[in-house]
Length: 127
Image 1 (cartoon, rainbow, N blue to C red):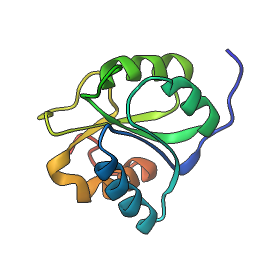
Image 2 (cartoon, rainbow, N blue to C red; image 1 turned 90 degrees about the vertical axis):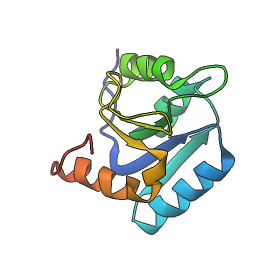
Image 3 (tube, helix red, strand yellow; image 1 turned 30 degrees about the vertical axis):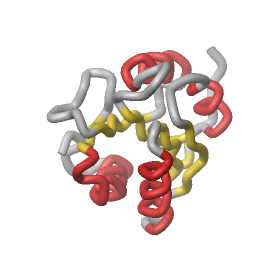
């Protein structure tokens, strides 16, 4: 595997089957100083997106049509192990083994803070 450039620490790829959720996330992140480098509505083709956009973070919905979060996360880990995966779902009560951190969609407004904590190396990424 060839050496990849270090990702921009404030770059985010959004993967969620809801266009409305992606829009809200985009606004939240952009207002918090993060850069959205891409969006997808499912995990199909996620590796190409990750390799093209080289994000620090992938916000990954757990339940999506075609390719779900767990399967997409495995593919990301194989191709871009330095990319941090944030599981983002209404169905989560704890961090799945495939994620670096998680956040329930009920707490959507807290997601920029979670990424700042992970970027700074402070705080509990499983909050």
